Length: 542
Image (cartoon, rainbow, N blue to C red; front, side, top):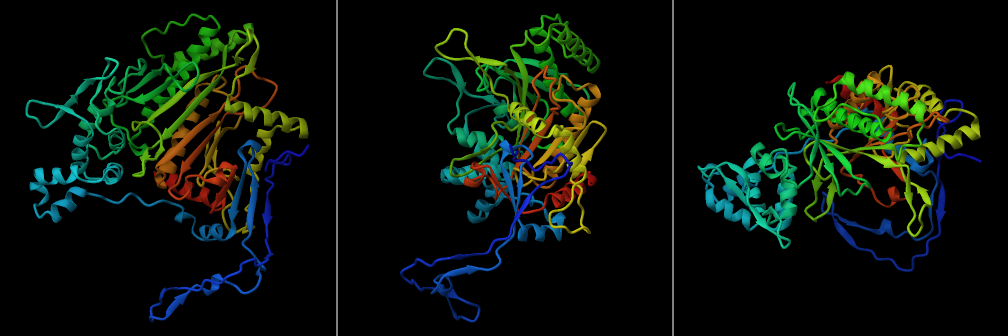
């Protein structure tokens, strides 16, 4: 058996290189010569080069590096040598520009010759006549609060204060089933608008942040409002995740639309609610009594509960656990195209989603026949077992060694070869050799810790710091849409060295995913080592 992975038992990365040369038989019957335009001297530019008389020969095509992903189920990465060499000459050019300032109010005020301060009703009327696609584009990109307030009035009905200037709530109306819902006249415009950080905070509050305004999801946990931080845990009962899931949201008394606004304490609260809910659910399955009603566990109390669970598992084993794997993810950022396509995420205020995954699920039509329920960490476990059987070696130990022993694919020894962006005694944040998004980062525990139940307070602190550092680096380089996923080991598994892994997957404007990505073929325009240089430089700037 030959495993398709770039990691070898020698602790080295394995990859290939295509050096193409080819000849294509010309099967065209007709020539369609046309003038394309004029050059700077007004001489005609034509398309004759597009219609060769004979066969087409490429003696020396572009070299393409092919790097199998460390995990076979994640496909293969291809790096164009010409693109990557250009980035290697200037690694710090790997960045995205900041959004430009945009104001339709200023533009219309000039066109209508009424001055921005006195625009009044005439500009409001002009806004109301704008095409739907323009309204959506403005809602997503305008940096002018005046624009966004005008758009807010077009998207929904407000209740205002006695002076009629400041919104204090939304107008509600009865739907066909007799339930009262906010009176929203344009849902796409509303949702795009509330994701724009330039919308005045009071509008964010009444439109989307206040508990209850988005529906009846109960708040079942809270990181208390201390040290300028506050986080709620919402229960999503009727969830797309079987058996429901939780969402830890920054509280409505704070505004955290960007990673730059997020404090270390905010992030600790977001993660604390994940650890706390997971430990509480495991303890309940084991029949343990936990004195934690209507309060948030302290950091000390959380660690004691974890240790008590481990002791109880040693006594009972995992047989009482109906749910034995964690699910954690983060969609950061939002965008909505004027064409009507939602590009990323579902909520503007920074939030994490988490749940526990069932061990088994019933087959329909049977009384007791079960199949294994899916967890993405199982894909890692299956491969780690195959690797161990094939080579008699720990995949993750070899993976960490390969990261440490890395050498550049372009063999330029004078350039940086280090893939590590940040590390401490517990975790490594690094650029994977085979990136599945243009700017992917990964985080892995350096020791044999496979899930958050196996992570003590020091390791949890390292995980929190590493994840936040990764997000600060990526957003500092200009990434606005990032998905983060966790690959955990099932609770109680002891026969393999499966380590807790996080993958950070930015979506870039020119690389949203297409047929190549659907085949798990990931196209890249830089060497991973050069992206690591850009990331380390960004970390040092904070």
